[in-house]
Amino acid sequence: MGADALLRAAKVRGVMIATAESCTGGMVAAAITDISGSSAIYDRGFVTYTNAAKMQMLGVQAATLDAHGAVSEQVAAEMATGALRNSDAHIAVAVTGIAGPGGSAHKPEGRVCFGIATRQGVHCETIDFGARGRAHVRLAAKDHALHLLLTAVDSLAPRD
Image (cartoon, rainbow, N blue to C red):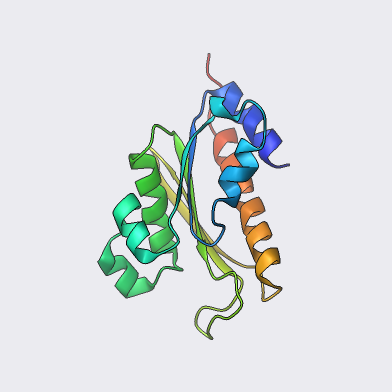
């Protein structure tokens, strides 16, 4: 499973995808666009590493950032919704987390929040990958985002 399966499924269903990434820094977009033919299913990506970028490019609200912090399902939801709104995509995924090193007792290293937005709504979840190092957390987050996209695409009926 991965970007190849996502490409096949999205082509069958006529689905376009957008990404909004923070801690992965474009790794999800790169995984998709590494595959020949990805232009048929990939519309655009937003790498919004700072809070200012999240607000300016995706419409994340300052009040949401203040209340919940950048690493939260609330911000992931607003990132995914903003990516969908600011693209021609049918599905958008958002990734925001603490790849490390560092973190806190409240938000430990390895915590990543994901959002998947479609025109039907937004689904969010948080995964704690553990303090296994920056590279591991980022790769695991990229893989999980691809899995979430594939699951969302698979839930749609194939186009006629």
